[in-house]
Length: 428
Image 1 (cartoon, rainbow, N blue to C red):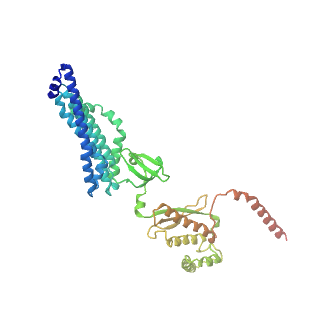
Image 2 (tube, rainbow, N blue to C red):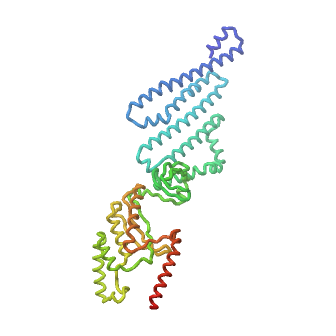
């Protein structure tokens, strides 16, 4: 500074011009040095680091590069130059140092955020990240980083102790609780979700209250994003997964089996005892032959033991029914179906009769969790059962449709004709 001042004095300039020009020249020189230092740091040093990174086999350093950790670190160089150049301007030294330190704090904030982002990205490369996500913790750390950095920056500019500022902020705790309510609830929810392993990225969850039914694609501090099967995205508050109930289908996906639980509604008026013709017909069905022979023998022995005469009345004793044969056929059909897991629960049961008929429920597990394959297996099974029900003399129930209503007059006409024919025969 003195060198510049003496140089300007040699040109016989007055003191005012010498003072202002020397300051302007020195400031310009510092700015040029900062620009050059920043250029060297970014264009030379960082490029050298990039070259080293691309040559090694590690992946974490590439993530550090993508997170711009080194680029943000380069901003410290101009800040340090400005800080140590403050002594050149004694009058403004304190102010310059404060602003330089504040700039360093801002750079440090960005650097720490980049490091946190890089740490999260590195963690994501490990399998444990799918089980124990840490995104919510990283977001909390970033919020804490911003709060601490802001307090340090303000304390530096005001020349106060940061602890004094923190004690003053304590009085505003109620305001902070209100402002960061969702974040605090999300943090608590995130800890519970992770500790109890309630949900992971990739899980299929169902939450009707929020219209969520799909795969979890992101778990953050405040929200859990679910990609529904129609490709829409539903954002569910993190704490809602703790306060409300939801269905997680992870167990089904892990087992490799998916449940089939659907009913056939049988018209109760079509249920009857099996005639000899029906039994002989059903014996030709390879899945039922052994069953019918075994059951006929068992029933015959029972009736003989208890001296029951079924010829007197078909209600007496035990007998096979068409609904029983159909139920046995479905069971055998499922056991022999390649898409059904034989080792899992498999049953065909009757539920309580309803106004829609007798529900014959199929309860089994498909040996796949792939949606399209599962639906194909389920459809193939019921396609077949719908077609074969009539072979057992059974009718499937359905509500009357337009065509049924149109046929009512013809049915009534036929009934009247039959009635007249019966009356005519009776008179003869």
